Image 1 (spheres, rainbow, N blue to C red):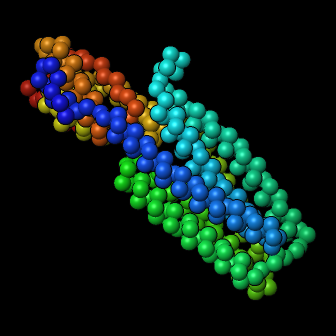
Image 2 (image 1 turned 45 degrees about the horizontal axis):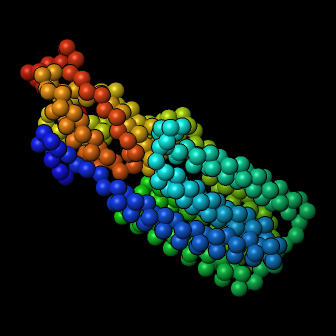
Image 3 (image 1 turned 180 degrees about the horizontal axis):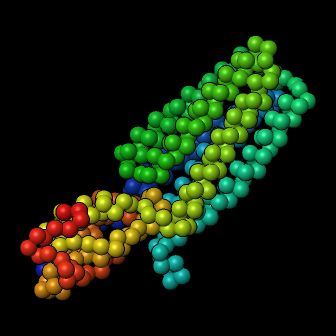
Length: 316
C-alpha cells in the first residue's frame, strides 16, 4: 500500500506476485497432467490387452482430465499475454475455443464407447480378468484420489478457481474407476454382462463432462455474471468516501473476469480526490477478487432523490 500525490492510500498490484501465482498454478497443472496421462494410458493399455470395454472407456474418461489440464495451461499462457490493438480485452477467449475443440473430441469418444458397449451386449464376449489387472486399476484409483487431494489443497492455497474446478472434474474419474473395478470383480465371478454395463456408465459420465464444458463455454461467450453484485457492494461499502454504486457488471471466466460499475461520490469532491478514491476502490476489488483482470469505474454524484440525511444504500 502506498500514498499517491494527494495523500490517498492506494493498494498497488504487484506484477511479480501475479506472475509467481501463475507459475505455481501452472506447476501444479503440469504435475497433475503427468499423473492423469499415466493413469489414462495405463487403463487404455490394460483394457486393450484384456478386451474390457469398460476399462478402455474409463481410460478415455481419464483423458478428459488430461484435456482439462491442457486447457488450463493454455489459459494461463494466454492470460500472461498483454492486450494489444486487436484484442483490447486480452486473448483469454481462445481458451474457450480450445475447450469447444475438446468438447467435439469427447463427443466422438462417447459415441465410440456407447457403440462398443452395445456391440458387446448384442454379440457377447467376456474380457480376460486377472488379479494383476484389478490391482492396476486399484493403483490408478489411488492416483486419482491423490490428484483430487493435491489439486484441492493447492487451489485453496493459491485461491485458484481453475485448480478447484479441475479437482472436481477428477472426482468423477474416481467414481467411474470404482464402478469399473466392481464390474471386473463381477466378470471374474461369472457375470460378463457387467463389463459393457460399466462402459455405458462411464459413457454417461463422459456425457456429463460434455454438458459441463458446453455450459461453461456458453456462460463465457454469453457474458454471464461472474461475481455476485452483493459481493462487490460489500467491498465498496468499506470505503468511507463512497456514497453508493450501481450498474455493476461482470463478465469473463471464473478466473479471468472483467468488472465495470458506476461509483457515487459527493458532487463537491475535487476531481483529483475522486480519481484517487476510485483507485482505492479498484485496488480493493482486485485484491478481494484476484480473478479480476481489470476494473473500470465511472464516477458520478448520487441520484437527485438520494437521501443525504439517511445516507443509506444497498450494501452499506
